[in-house]
Length: 497
Image 1 (cartoon, helix red, strand yellow):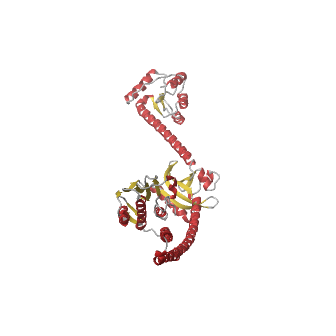
Image 2: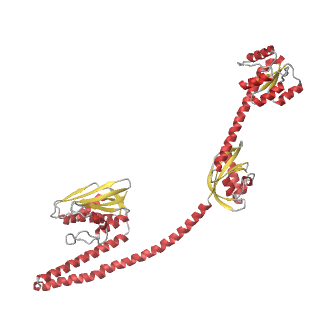
Image 3: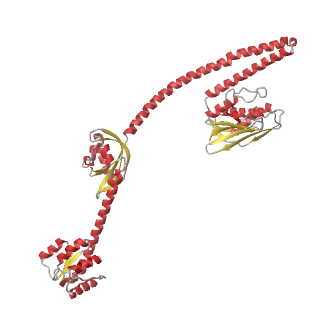
């Protein structure tokens, strides 16, 4: 309080307390005291007499506006003419009260404090808005996509990516233009209507392919989306524009490649059909033309043995028997080669199959080979898979037949059929206690004509396991084997789940 009369100061304090204020006050009478007190603490309100002997209220008001601009300043004076009253208010005083009307002082103080609080909150809001807009500008400048703010159908903001996309040199080239000018004419009115509806409903517009124009008139292929936004205190639309020119070119290139690929596939299909026909012709040749000489050899050997057998010495009979056996072996080899060829060309007829049923059918087929032998079978519960029943039965039959063949020297022979399952595949195995094989040559097991045992010891053509691998490969699986000499072998194949 700036007041040189102690009794007037007391009356002011009484009026404020009567008006409901609880406060502490400091009274000063000179400019020096006033400055000193302003340095010591920040008042909520400054009450000042107009005329002091060495210090006047307008000087105090000027000081307050520099030192504490947010603190309301009220003149409390004995008299103040109309001209001085106007000057006081124009100079920034919050109010004035005459000393003979102190009953009005509490209301004036209340009013001044509310106005000061309002001004402070307003400044905070403005600062927050300014900060928010600056943050928005900073973030959108980092975006690789064009970002525009459209208010009342006019562009009021554009980021640097937008300036580049639409062919400008600076944001000023776009700001102030109608957004519709950047849209192809045939779509301009509908796009403007969509933005108006979006701002009205507050619902964003999702990405849509659009044709837009750069400042030089070049057509741009873009995806655009929009969302409502309050910008500079006004309703606006934030428009995101993503250039898809490269993607459109890539898609066109992919379409051209697909057309070319389809053409090549058609050509390859024709070539494959021709190759299949050639293979069928070759198979026919093998089946008929190559079999004829074998039939002749086998038939004439039989005639010779029947007609001249008693007159032939033992050595000659042995040689004729070797010729007959070799002819039969050649016949079996031709049969296996034909089967191997058909496996590659046969169409897969996939269905759900119970592997356990295939094992039981194969065991019935192999009963003649188990006659007069002691064979201990261990068959686990096998899963249901999807595949070609005939081809997978051929796999099971071949592996079980091999297990029986190579356990022939064992008494008892032990053969186990089991399965291991993971999240991607079933792994089926056939294990035996037979003669086994050397793991150094495991890579040869599934090759055509590859055999690790002498034909004199174990018959065969070297086609069976090659056929197994080809069938499993066509079903999307793998084949492999483990073993050791005289310690048995285990053959595995996998099938997708």
